[in-house]
Image 1 (cartoon, helix red, strand yellow):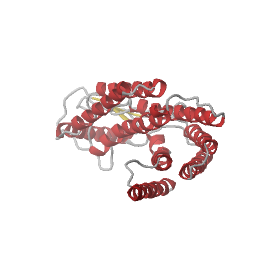
Image 2: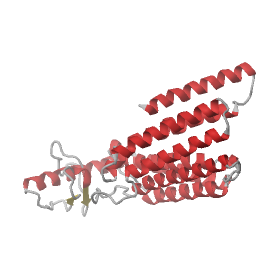
Image 3: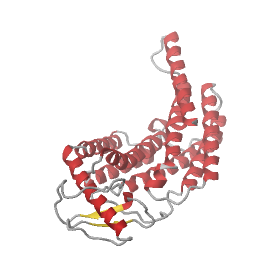
Image 4: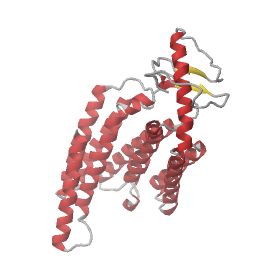
Length: 325
């Protein structure tokens, strides 16, 4: 809910900037107003929204331990207070010392949420997947929150520099905090959750797993170079490479052939699950040559691993009603 409110605030700030530029016949937005709008849109809306979804979707996908709810609420309060303080400070052209306090509050909110989510702790149970699933999407998700932690450290250093009137971070034009948040966190989590959710929703399987690995490496290296050294064109090229690679994989994965292939696996998975339930939890092997095992603690087919040793026609089997693959 708070993310939606911040989205409205960001839109209002954008409209205010546009009218101000029109009144003054300016070709550029007022600097501090633009900073306020970006912070409201990026942290207030986009990042808080992603964090809210993470408490349900990412916990389920990665089989994380139960979230520390009390700490996640503290993180939400810190992020909203910090963002509100910073937006007002920049809109009213307050001193850097005032803005520095906001950065410390926001950084504390990020750290609190990461600890609450327990993203870097071992999973509550071992998760297995249907053969063909790109299981390394977990790398993207955990790396994203790693970059969020890096952003929190950078914000703390920047705040200390403001308070001491001695900038610690390098050239502001390289925008290390912004790149750690936008490319390191937002883009990385979109890649990770997207490749898992979109293939599930489309009833398909991700192709070219090696190209997704290339996208993972290129994006991480590009962000690291930008944050650590301020390399512009090279780090930007690596970021573009990762985006192109991800787009190619999605385009290839949503073909009719891939959907048919997934449907065959889903059909067999349904029959195997039905047979397993009828046999009282035994692990059957069907004539199709496909075996199935359930993830520990799993009560549905979403945690199944299918091993295919033969070609299966869509008419070879029909999934049991109500089962999922």
